[in-house]
Amino acid sequence: MAKITLRQLLDEAAEAGFGVPAFNINNMEQGLAILEAADRCDAPVILQASRGARTYARDIMLSKMMDALVEMYPHIPVCIHQDHGNNEETCLTAIRHGFTSVMMDGSLEADMKTPASYDYNVVITERVTRMAHWVGASVEGELGVLGSLETGAGEAEDGHGFEGQLGHDQLLTDPDQAVDFVSRTRVDALAIAMGTSHGAYKFSRRPDGDILAMNVIEAIHEKLPSTHLVMHGSSSVPQELQDVFNRYGGDMPQTWGVPVEEIERGIRHGVRKVNIDTDCRMAMTGQFRRVAMENPREFDPRKFMKPAMDALRDLCLDRYERFGTAGRASRIRPVPLDDMAERYRRGELDPRIEMRRAA
Ligand code: G3H
Ligand code: 13P
Ligand code: ZN
Image (cartoon, rainbow, N blue to C red):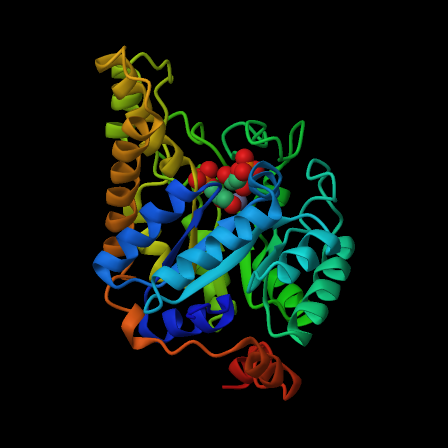
């Protein structure tokens, strides 16, 4: 079995200078497509499940399905990650179901709508990190609130994200606060806010530095060179996927996502995990629409699913190649959770902040 922790995978990525896309998963078809892409190009995988995915597919189905994918591809290291955990219970039940990594998103309160205080975020994230590390699982924290620098609004379309308006002080992660946050919480990876948001409607124009603040990533990496950074809301919303969606009866207003070149720039500055869900959804639903319009008599779901899976596989392959993930799977020997727990106990995986400052 080749399950891997997020910490080990991102340590490997940092060492070799590549990034790893984290694809959201809700069902078997997505899992098969992502693993087929990884198998074709020898890429390690991060499968991440949101709370919504766990409710949709149910914990037992989802976790056994992901375990089956791990078994089918024993040569591919697979990290199974909780996306946007809202409290201790979500994170610990994920670990109990075999996840090797959790995100404790304390940037928002447990309702996932109310922006949280810094103290709340530190306390809950540190608590989850302490518990997860006892069993060797990894933790991603988030500092700064995801939302649009253009409008000051959060995203509502996924059912999480703050309501109302926030200023740039909350929408952009502060580099000095990031140093304090990582040293106090001991997270393995840090999600940061720099103008991205979830969903298809991220930017009303091709983003420049005013609305996609890549300089914030560079400033944080400068202060925290050993910390693995995570970009959320990193779908590129490619024009060709918008065109397919609209050509076959969709009605998606023109929109812009995060250009892949900007993600590549992030990877050169400490970004190791890149969260992508919307592009995967669009790749699949565009094909559902095409098949439905081209073959109005078709009623076999597999005839819809197969081209959708092929489109998702091709998207994943592209990201594995562009982020430098391709060709890395066979070089990684996954460390078991118990051994990771021992390494945490010995302090070997503590944040390397003071050492770097002194160097
Ligand atoms: O966190 C955002 C992901 O796109 C997951 O979305 O909560 O609708 O599954 P979801
Ligand atoms: P997108 O909506 O841009 O794909 O972002 C997904 C994400 O950040 C999941 O946590
Ligand atoms: Zn996210």
